[in-house]
Structure formats: structure tokens, C-alpha cells
Length: 482
Image (cartoon, rainbow, N blue to C red; front, top):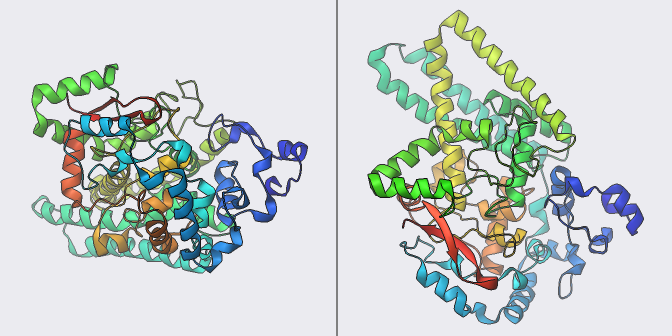
């Protein structure tokens, strides 16, 4: 109904600003042209009801169908347009000063993200989507079900082997620790599949999609629809200084920023990094679900199980999303009840060893991925005046997790830029989409070759709080330890 609207009055009836992807965004009915609607736009609107520009509204010729022939032809035009709007991608004086003022060593990006042009000359989201081959937006239900079954089967298999061959004795704690690490790493693949369901990237059959996502996330004690909503907000405000939803940095001069900087100075960089790693990787995920920890100030304290908990001026779960939160709670409560029954019959140690050990490592992987995808010493955050959806999406960082983790985790960490450009791209199409972005927007695509553990330590030890750099359109907020 949304995209069949042909005049302003019909559009306004079919569309509600309160459910907009970009909260408080203005509606521009003239930007919606159903005959040129890109398939990705309709898919993402399922979760967020976002207003999108049609592809015919981008500069130059072409339409959504022109992308089906591949990205090369579109890239030529896109490069030409981008060069005309931002000649040679040259930096302004303010941007150069902001980069040179950064007191931290650069990441493997070598300051590339600090060189991004202002949002006014950034390519439009429609033009970026048009550079990605159309087949990347086509979901294959059978293929998606295969990957869901693969991750689930491997996880269950690990549990069965441990139950049969590892004695439940204290002397075997190294074996149980290894089991927790391996099984938690494998089970993260289940988390990623459920994540794909939440993004409407699993199947065109929404009942199948939500059933699989609800089941997998509930088994991992994640409230499916609650997370679906909050994660959509995260995508809609990536690297936004106040309205971002996860891993929003503390600001120098604010209370939390001052505390963080003082702690870093008093205990030293190494101990500070250790505290950060434990706080984020072990306690970060439950703290986020229960209190909205690392979320932006716009929503304040939130709770993924009780939708009315919201201390900020912007609601995380508006309207009908509150009912969906309660529906999500049913799945989590059912799993908790099952675990309780299991512990009553088999003993708590059995449940702790077989379930909660891997569960902790699933949470570690989840936070590690999200943290490193959006944070580093030279990856800025932006205030509302400088932020745009597409600029925030391009501030996402792909990293080298290697073939084993890419296989187990469905390339969630090595193709995440494409995922933030368009969340409805299935993971098995993400490599093609990523290659198209590399070709068309090489000046904007971010890939940090730093080994993961080195990057994690750098982020934990040096990304303490952000402060303002630059002026005007080149204003950005980058990390400091001073």
C-alpha cells in the first residue's frame, strides 16, 4: 500500500511518520515513485517503514532495473557524479586540521574515514543501491533454511559430543572451557541467521522468516521482536553521536566521559583496556538488553523486556512495538522454563556446562563484532547537523576474520558495510554486494586489515571518549585519551 500511493493524500494515509526509519524525518511524497522502486527499499520498509528516494530521483540516467545487468556500467556514472560533486575527494582545511589534531595513532584505515566529505556532497542512498547488482536483493528461502539448519545442526552436534565424551568433573574444566569456546563460536552462526530474519533478509515468506528468527533468538535468550526494533534503530542512526543505539561513545566533558578519561589516566592504559574488555564482552550484552547500555542519550535507559522503561525523550518501542515486546518475552520465558526444568532433573552443573558456557561466548562474539564494526581511533561519530544515513552506513568497518569464522558466522564481520548500506541483502549475496561497493565507492568503503585481536586491544585501550574536531560541515567527534 505504501508504494502504490500515487498522490500525496493517499501517501499520507498509507504512511505514518511516527514509525519512520529515520525518526522525526520529514516525508517527501514526491520522492516515492512506485514504478522505479528498488527491491531493497520495499524490503527494508517492512521493518522500519522508511521513506526512500526512488532510483529515478538520483542524478543521471537509469532506473532500478538498470542495476540488474551488473555494477560496472553504473559505477562509471557514479564515479563521474561523485567526482563532479566532490572533486578529487579533496579535503577542506577544517577536515585536514581535524585529522592532524587527532592525538591517537591511526587504525589500519590510516585516517581514511576522517577524510569523508560533508553529507551535502555524499552520494545518495538510491545511487549507492543502484550500484549493487539487483540479484543481491533476491532472497532464496531454501538456501536460507539450509544455512539455518547447518548452524543449528553443528551447534547441537557439539553439545551431544560433549555430553557423551566429557565427564562432568572439576578436573575436566579445561575440556569444558574449550567446549564452551568452540560451541559458542559455532552457535553464533545461529545468532547471525536469526539476525538476518530480523532484517527481512531470510525469506519473502514472513511467517517462515519470523518463526525461524523467533525460535533461534529465543533459544539464545534474545527477545526477537524487541531486538528487531532496536537493531533497526541502530541501522537508522549508525555512528550518530546522540541517537545511535549501540556503542555510542562517551563525550569528553560529560559525566561519563570524564569518569572514563579519569579512570584511564589513574589506572593506566593496560588495566583500563582489561576492564573495558571484561565490561563489554562479558557483561555488555545483558546490560544492553536490560538497561540500554551503550545506547545514545536520546532514549536514555531502556529495557528490551519491559517496553515502558524509557527515560529519554525518544521512545525505543513506540506504538504497536510494545505489544511485540511482550510477545517476544513469551519465547524467552518458555526457554528459561525449559532450562529450569532441565536443571531440576539433570542438575544445575549440567545445564551450566552444556548451555551457559557456550551462551557466554555467543555474547562475546556478538559484542566483539558490533564494537569493532563501528569503533576505532580514526572512525568519527557525527552530530545531527553533519550526519546522514548513507554517511553513517559508510562509517562501518569491514575486517579480516578469516575463512573459518566467515564460514561459521556467515561473513557478518567481513561484509558488514554492505549490510549497513542495505540490511535486506542475504548474507550469501553480501560478497557480490561488497565487491560492487569496493568498485564504485573505493574512496568511501572502509576495510581495516589489522588482525582482530590487535584491533580489539587498540579499541579497548584508546577509544575512551570523543571530543569535537573541526568546524562547520567538517565537524566530527573523534576519540581521545587526554
